[in-house]
Length: 429
Image 1 (cartoon, rainbow, N blue to C red):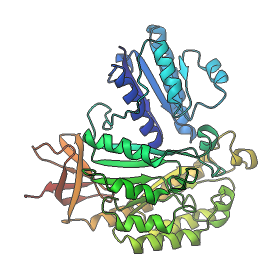
Image 2: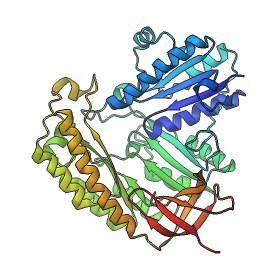
Image 3: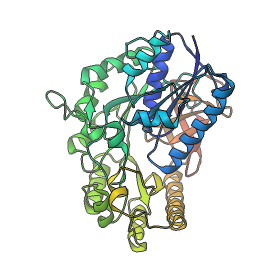
């Protein structure tokens, strides 16, 4: 059986789908390789949400073309958001690719594998690994809904992943139960918009219902979910977060802009005032919550004053983490068709840097409040000779100990803080 290497870029959904692909290949007797040159089969799981991501994908495809010239038997498979319905055009551009399959189209992968003599099973399997790609991980990403119906003006995802399709509750619960039997302690439910989960299923179960079902699984320690949409998150879901012990106190809630006119142009369907009200409700119901958000700077037509509105929102709401990106026109989107990308690159970079500088100060102040506090982390692996894991509020923590903490919950005391991670020592039991 061939040795395989999976290269992944982009969102947590891509990472979850790479776990699934690894599971299928492992089920066929394939073995994971550590790099491109050591693999007989390479899978690229791609992202084109921003130009920078697409450039990395194209660069990697070029690298693999040279590798295949030297090793003609190398098999190259490409999935993710680069792959749309026009696969013939992609095949013309990249003739060295052996298979192009849309995100989540596992039947296409299975059929190709069987033609190649790779007996991939139909059974749903998932083998989580840590970021290095090889060691087992106690955390698993579980897709619960595919696609998106929102069509935000800047976003290519609905055009590549299609409309929303939810997985049945029973199927998700069975998968998580099986993963827990294999040692998984934490699951993260993922989708382009998890708050829309279940609207297309019989009986219309929602995310809160799913969280209740998963909370009843013995030996599952933690549950997370992402990404949320401010217009769709419900009070019922917030109440579930507050009442279910296994649901972690962390929420990703992308705001994208602090200006109402920009939000309208983005087709986000909420106002800054509504977003602030939502944050107030969440923090009131779940006092220990940590909030992360996404912000786009340099959207077409964004004035300096409108950017300052975003900066003021950051200063007012004080997020734990901000993922900030410069607007990147995506061919086929509404913004690409209707607006001119009129903000110079240097202005976008300046605005991005301002957000990051302010956020670094805020994150430093928030994390400093954990100094000398005792927290619980789940050991996820080792890096640089230290164990690492995350608190329930999703803070990355490193600590030293000779014991085996993989998949174990540990009580630790914070000794060092920074905007990006924490240092700790193990508490004596």
